Structures are given as structure tokens and as C-alpha cells.
Length: 192
Image 1 (cartoon, rainbow, N blue to C red):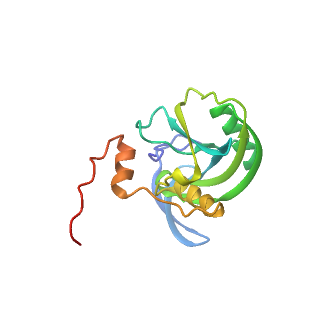
Image 2: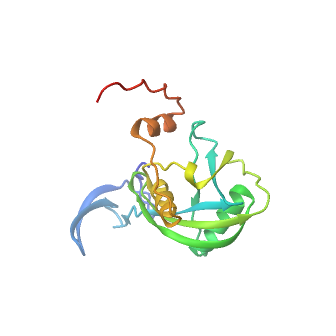
Image 3: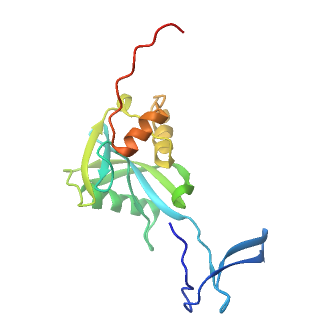
């Protein structure tokens, strides 16, 4: 995400200015006119491992490649608890009603300057996707593959609680998944 260029208080162009903070000198985008600091703190994002009729629902965002499916996610809103927020997101994105919620963990996602708060939810109802999502798939636990990023690590941790050792996409599989490509079949291996 690009840094802001102007102060949100007085509209003066921001500059990288070093100041002494609790942890020592720190350069941040600051306003030279009014002193406002752009903190650029991580945004809390909620993620749901949606258990639906004994399977896990993964969905594909309209902006993603055709082979990329992931957890239901969304931004936490002011005035709601994380549990309320994840129930709201699941309802908005899938039309499903959450009947049980359990924290899986909190995960780092620095690439997007986010902190992911992941939950396992049990949901019921009839799936109707929001316009933001174009497809979903239901997976039995042994068929799930995890991806090497925040929500993929949450899925892996949850699978371990269910007695399944997670399998991660290989780097090549993950790159193909992210780009929407089919991998060529592997050549038979001979010898060592």
C-alpha cells in the first residue's frame, strides 16, 4: 500500500522525519507544519475457517486467479468485537449463519501491513456468495492444502488440532496457484 503524501490534518506534504520515541529515534512520515505523525499501524483483519456440513469452505475472490481459493476474510469494523466481526463477514460473504466461534490464533501478514485474527466457525444455511466472491469449494480435511502466508498458517494450525498434519503447497504449486496456471505433469524420476 502506498504511503500518504499529505497530512490528513492540514494537507501539508509529509516528510520522513526522525524523532525520539519510547523505543529510541524513529523515522516516520510526519507533517513539518503541524507535527502530525502518520503511524501506519497494521490493520486488524478477521479470517474464518468455515466448517459447513463437516467440510471446510474455501472461496475465490472475483479479483483472484481461477485456481486461488482461501478463507473468508474481512476488515474488523469499529464498535464490534472480533467474534461479532467474523460472524458478520461470514454472513456478508456467504449468507451462512455462524453458530459457534473459536479463536485459532493471531498471524503476521506484513506484506499487506495486517494482523490476521483467525477463527474456526461452524456455519449453517444456504450458501449465496456476495458479489465480491465468484466461487467456493468444500473440502474434506485430508484434502486441504495450506499456503505459505498468514491465513494458510492459520489453516495449518487448525488442522493440527483436528489430528491432521497439514500439507503445504510446494513453492511451484503456490506460484501457479497465485498466477492461475496449470503445472505441467511431473516427469518420472529415475535413480536417486
